[in-house]
Length: 230
Image (tube, rainbow, N blue to C red; front, side, top):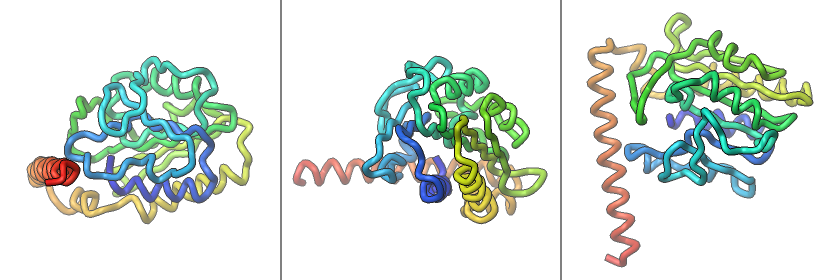
């Protein structure tokens, strides 16, 4: 998960008070991201469930997006942040999300477009905003957008809702999403995508992943040592 997504979720929560339970699909913190804050920690007092198809840090329930073990209409907010590109059959996943979402519920999804392959554990897809519209087509309200260069965006975003969904609330959600796309979706990594050729970017990304993985291991070792009283 990219740290630029935290402000997106924060602004959406501030704009509309995301309905509960909030379920994050793809919540596993891989080794090189294990030092990052869990998204659930930004929702104190709210019912929040982190799910992934394999157990690990940040995962409360093991769930397969192709066939979720969740009841119809049991999810208030579905968060799929940089997850859908890792799903083998995204259309099947979105049918499941639609089934599980409550009336009046919301789904927020993001994905990378111009970005190195990152196999966690695999990387299948790249989507345009038009593709996001297709994935969300069963929802009553949909909105999508892209951030970065017009013809080579680094990020795509989509939100969908089930009726009944208050019109003013939907307008605030769209405004918050668009504001993030226009001003909050870019970090140094996204700027590098514009500034450097792919031959440099791929090498830099590999180095960045190695460095963050080492940092996470050192933090974990330090935390373990302090917990043991050493």
